[in-house]
Length: 354
Image 1 (cartoon, rainbow, N blue to C red):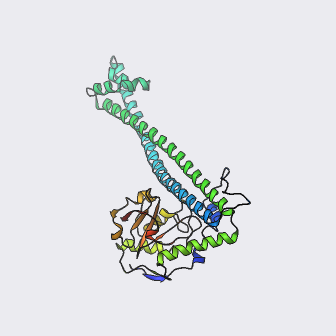
Image 2: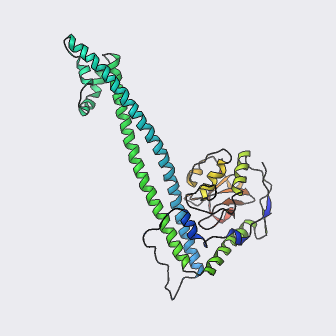
Image 3: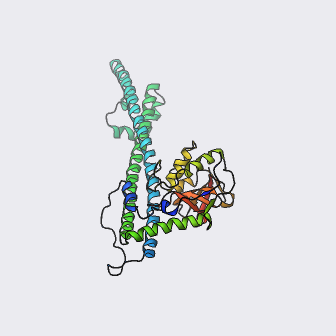
C-alpha cells in the first residue's frame, strides 16, 4: 500500500487549537480538578510574559504526559490482573468442589471401615475438620498417602493445589490493590498539572493565547517542512504492508485532538495513536510508549522506514510514527492536534520496527 509523499500541510490556524482549548481537552479527560493549583508566577501588577507562560506550560504538559503513560501502564496491568484473578477464583471454586467430592468419597470409605472395626489413620487425617492442623501435617499425610488408596492421594494433591491457588489469588489481589493506588496517584498528578497549566494560561488574554497557539503550530510546520510550504516525506517504502496500513491510519487522524488516556477513534494520546493505528493493520501493540519500545526489532534512526515507531526522551514517555523524510506523525500534548513533526525536534530514545 502506498501513501502520498508530498502534500500541503494544513494551515497553522486550523492545526493549532493548542493551548486555546486546553480547558476543553481537560474536560474530555472526564476529570474534575481537585485542590488548589499553584499560583502563577508574578503578581497582578507584574504578570508573566507569554514566553514564560509557554515555557512553564510546556514543562507541565511534559510532566503530565509522563504521569499519563504511568496511568496507561497501570490501567493495562489492572486489566490483566483482573482477568488472572477471575481465572484463579474460578479454579478455586472448581478445586474446592472437586475436593469436597473426594472428601465425601473418603467419608464413605471411613464409614465402611468403621463398620468393619476401625478407621485407617490416614483416612481420619483427611477428614480432619481443623484446616490449620491438616495443612501442618500435609507433608506427612502425603507420605502416608503414598501407601494408601488412590482416593486418599487425590485428596492430598487437590488440597495442596487448592492451597497454592489460594496463595496465588491472595498475591494477585494485593497486586491489584497496589495497581489501583498507582492509578489514583497518576490520575491525580495529571489533574494537578493540567490545572496548573490552565491557571497559567488564564493569566494571558484570549488574543495572547490564540497567538501562542498559532505560533506553536507554525513552528512545528516549519520544522517538518524545513522552512518550505510543502511537506516532503520522500519516496521510501514502508517497512511492510502492515506498516503502510498503520501509517495511513495515523496520517488519516491529522488534526484529531490530543486527550490523555485516549486511544481513538476520535481523540488520542501519543501511545494511543500508535496503538489505534496499528490495530487498523491487525496488530495489537502494548498500550504505553515504554512498552512499545519492545514491541518489535530495534533499529537505528538511519534505518528508519515509514511505519516504524520512534520513541522519544530518556524515560521513553513519548512516541510517534516515522512517516519518511525525517518526519514523524504524533499526538503532541493537550489542546494541540495530531500533526507532523521533525524527528529531530525531540531526543530519540529508540526506533522499533513492528
